[in-house]
Length: 422
Image 1: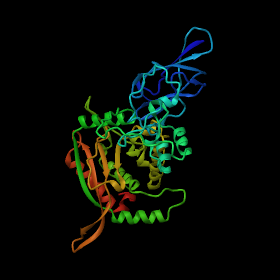
Image 2: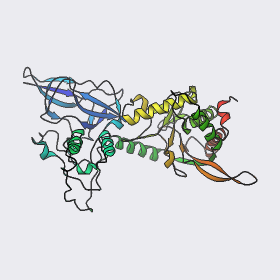
Image 3: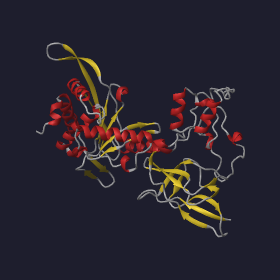
Image 4: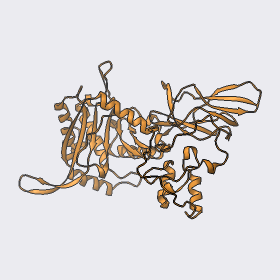
């Protein structure tokens, strides 16, 4: 028998290290060529690493959450052949998936060191029933199935790595008619659970820390009457073709922002504060913050300035679906020059959005509500919405910020102007 060392491959230009986010194998497993060994993440995109050959796993590089250097040993396999060790850099799986495809590792207990062989009996290594306040460890797809079936995952013992609940565990629970998972004595409610922040959650934390520490934010909030816009949106949706998605407010806002950026182009920029240079972009690459089962990601609608209303709507819908399903590529999740963030119906009255570093502006959409509005003679009911927008005060003055938002306000309140070249 011989040993084959599989090294962590180059998973992206300029990437020096990647975070280990998931193991698909354990020590002692027999794997086939092209079987997925594990997954690593860089820049919110996950890459699966396949096995280059048949063999038996004898060693794993580390635990979920560890940072691994590109080119370092990833997995060691015992393979048929001469006794001389062989070394090979695995090739990443053809498609890079968004971090939403990964399981949520947030509540996993400390993992047994990867170099130690697992227990032979999977039932002995299965996780115990959890405290009601602890979130079970399971992939988003497993959570969705359990939610649809009305199953509380805390009542299922996980047999996957680190006690992860797998599809097989859920199937077995359902096959038993939910009788096999009887409630065990719960730990004290005062117990403290240590949650390691890994994967996408850690990337979000790092990015927010950088943005908050390096960018002096100024937030400008403006009230907007969207009654006419909502009437127009309703009419367009009632007459739309079957191949077109339902229009939300976002495509209108994107077109209004493109018009405003044409007059104030320095809002569509990156600020390199290390060298003191503002990189002003000609193309408007609109980031649209999107909530996924794994956390917040920002897919990018490229060249929004060249898209019409329907094209913007189609691309937003496509990217949001890809992000939520875990199919968005690294290229679709990077490169934005200005960002929109919206909580939809949960948007509240006002927010203080954090700028997507190294951008210099972010526009936040708040909830639409019917409010009394003075028209000069009487109070009338109107559909009102607040825009909460933040700007990098190092390169954007308050006066310019107000100009930018007021230009968007004018376009949204008089939606015909969005489509008319002045």
